[in-house]
Image (cartoon, rainbow, N blue to C red; front, side):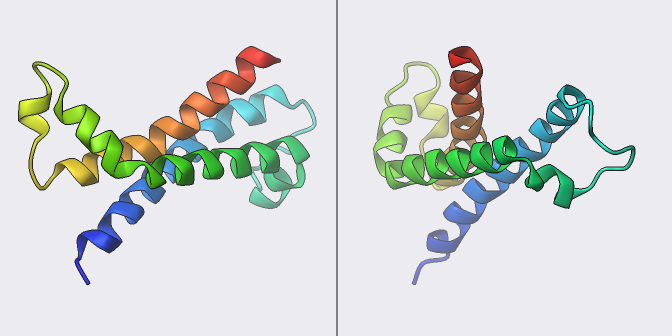
Length: 113
């Protein structure tokens, strides 16, 4: 088993976690009933927060399933592709997938409301 088999999903998970942490602060500010001290139990007791986290996870997993296709597309980008070709590209794209898929989904959900 290749080490990349474990590193790529771990990188996507790290990007997903960073995005979720970044979205906790605005979610707290939007809710007037938020307690003075932060509590993950309270944050995940809200249906909207659980739903957004689940949808972001699904988007990240879906994009990870298309990881090899995304790598092929990124390498073809003129001016950027030649610098990203190599062994580091799968990890960078996995980080971007984990961070970007969650961000795009939250942005779309915000625009639809």
